[in-house]
Structure formats: C-alpha cells, structure tokens
Length: 246
Image (cartoon, rainbow, N blue to C red):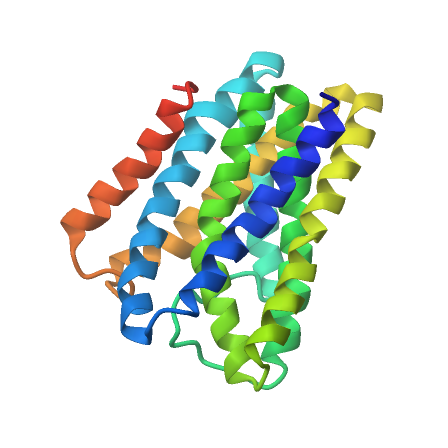
C-alpha cells in the first residue's frame, strides 16, 4: 500500500478520531463528561510521553547525531513556547471554558493550524516506519479528545449549534490530511530532514503534555485522585509499549 494512502488514513485517525470520540461526549450529561474527560487527559499524557521517549526520539537518534537531535528538540520546544505567546495555542480541556470575545474564531484558526502540524508530524513518522506512524497517530488522537471537548464547549457557549460546531471542527480536522500529504510528498526529496521532523514532533508532544496537560493535573483542576492519575498515565505508556516500540 502506498505510503501516501497510509499517511492519509493515519492523519484522519489522528485528526478526526479524537473529534469523533469528543462528539459522542456531547450525548452524555455534563456530570459524566466532567468525570470522564480528566481521565482521558491523564491517559493522553502517558501516550504522548511514551511515544516521544520510547519511539520518536530513539528513531531520530538512529539517523542523526544526538546533539543535533536534542538541539532540534530544544529549538522546537522554544518555538512552541513562542507560538503560544503569539497565538492561543493552549486549549481548554473541560466544559468550564472562559469564553472571550472572538474566542470561537480563535479556536477554529488555532485548531486548523494545529491539525495541519499534527498531520505533517504523522506523515514524517510514516516516512520513517508505518508502526511509528501508527503510534504517532494514536498520540495525536489521544490528546485531541480532551482538547476537542473543550473546543466544543467554547463554540457552544459562543452560540454555535451542535451541528455547526461539529461541522466546523470536522473541517478543521481535515487540515491534518493536508499536513500529512505535504510531509509525504516533500520529505522524499530531502530525506535528511526526516529525523529533524521527528525531533519537532517530539518537541510538540513534550510541550503539550508538560506545559499544558501535566500542570492542570498538578493543580487538581482536572483530576482529584492522584493514584488514578498515575495509573492512567501508566496505561498510556503501556499502550505505546504494547505496540512494540519500547
């Protein structure tokens, strides 16, 4: 099967899989969502840390000197830090989202760009190996679920109907496919960029998990039971280990 087809399929899993699960949460009572979404955040932390440290970075180090890999990783983390300052990169992960003027449009613009980048990272992973692409897509989908729940809340609070909110988030999710295609068709011409792209992917996952998700868990805003947090983070890591990358 052509890598472009695999990349498209996995980018749809990453971009729309999380959205589909998040959309089903709209059918649940608010009390149920408030209980389940924090669990997903803890699980997403484990998946993202696992795929970064057990799959992506070891793969990058195999084809690039460690100093260059970690220098790119550091540069990527700083890039996402600056990006967060310039654009609203960080997302709400609960139904209690503070809604500001123009919040809905900012969410949609930010999500579209974020999904494009995620798709490109999935495409770069597929160019290295299909199993790595699968792990990357799962990591993307895992952190998209609580993010999309929060985004839905912002759109609904801004006056959007459920159908329109779902449609707009779905169109935003398709940007991941565009990103994957750009990576698949561009990287073969410059294969030396693949390990750098993987390092940027690692930076993205580390930044989101450690600058966004983990602080929320520490402040107990999302999950009050620390034992459950640790167990769910461990299950996320175990998911990556089970895929054979440890």
